[in-house]
Length: 200
Ligand SMILES: [Zn+2]
Ligand SMILES: [Zn+2]
Image (cartoon, rainbow, N blue to C red):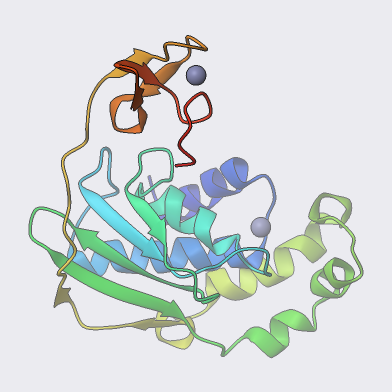
């Protein structure tokens, strides 16, 4: 897949076109290239993203997920919630890692676009004309890498990775499947957390 195709696929997955998911794609591609690795088909790569909850531009995270293959579904990504558009990519086999962050260079220009003005007024991206939608996307997409990204030197990660626990068992009360590490024991029987007396 060429870079432009990755952007288009990300937009399909993400649900709309926006500057922050575009910044995530650019940051993801830069990190893959810095480590000399391919998008993670399984859990070969691990990502730590620094976006938090309930703030603008969290869309950055979808760009990272699609581009690097570090996804919440596969469990090879986690949030270190600092509210920052930054992430660290780790190659698990070698421990080599790189942190990439989005620079503020273009933010004034992006905030001034009609798209962002409308977003600030509460209009959804899908209700904004295509050419206005693409303006901030293209600003990020066409920018030189050094203008929008800070790519730190590759370093040795001290992250520990544990093997995945396989297997499920039905809860003795509700009958629903529960992953083994989440079963709780009471009277010699195995229960899911909501059916047990434990709160976690
Ligand atoms: Zn978005
Ligand atoms: Zn249950």
